[in-house]
Length: 333
Image 1: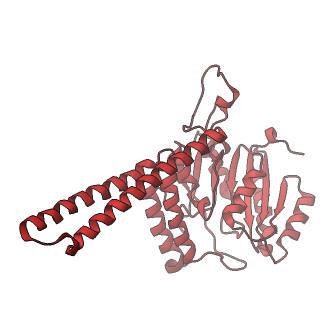
Image 2 (image 1 turned 60 degrees about the horizontal axis):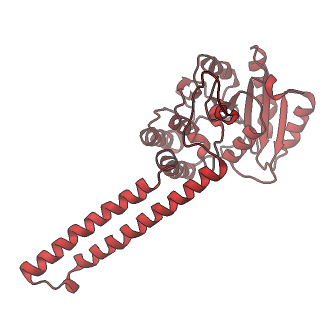
């Protein structure tokens, strides 16, 4: 039985109705990893398949000690499947991989070489994609541009599942929705060293794609959550209070205009629509400031009750006072 300390790499493969691809994919993974000296584990996560995928996985697991197979009770989505794979894996390096054979397992050693060079995240870049332009490549390009601009982590291909992460970068990271695609942005927000590597992309051979335009919109919405969590998680009053102050200033300006019109033009306040707008600005400003204060209380409760630090360490040199000091994200000794 492989132990936590004996593993170098854990390959995470979420699966949803890919029974026809599994055997070929597993053989390609074995061929790629056996060609290296890397010790590895493959964690397959069946995300509620209805085509007998798990039966195929169970058969592989009985014959290959490197394999762990997990079955969900129903379909929870790719992000949940990747998180389950991470939770049930043991490697120091995590490599997610699509099960539809479009990602090439032969590229995994290339990603691991960059990890050995000292990078924390190695992102696959499908430079020459074989997907349809209008429904897949164009929306993906636009989404990548938006995510890169908002997150400050410029990547050509956030949508490529094939990536490599140091486990320490993923420590304490909880993902929801379609946020598995935004892991490099989360990692970048805590100072991870990130590089992008071109990888092979192949046409789908079996089944049909589970992706569509709706998924692109979901990713963009998740980006709003990412921006808030990365920029304002520890000080939410800055965003709520900032907008509150802006509205209060606007309300003050409109109040001056209303008074000026009353004095100079004789326009009654109750007949001036700007007075109503000014009142709405003041009420909204008060609500935003109060929401910011409540968010501050929630954030403080979150961090203090669970002992979560508001900082991230990269390295500790010399003795430490507490064992918890070396368990934060990204710490090496």
